[in-house]
Image 1 (cartoon, rainbow, N blue to C red):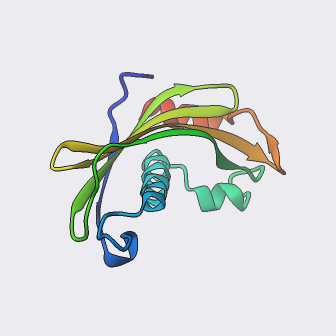
Image 2: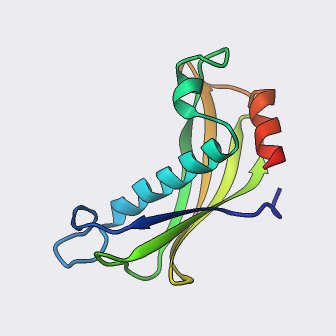
Length: 137
């Protein structure tokens, strides 16, 4: 899985994303990365809303189990950022991802994220449809 091409999502920074100094507030990067993960799954044909509503069979969803994040350089209002999300590995009930936030090719923030599949508040083995969708992307 580590040779998978990254999914890229571009976003602009708005005033609401920044702190008093004009730099992007650290928690805003978590939202940006969440959007990157959601859109990566959507690009594979996995709509999280439909999955959580049980429209594809058993209702399940994904939660962040672990995240290690490094803040290297600040982004500022009006910057265009690119969020790269790369699938590193599929576990029994989890996905390991790398996420990188860039501005003009320069890495600003990077994270290793483990996402767990859950149903009714408990871990769930990744459904075969999820494995197939992620393996084909």
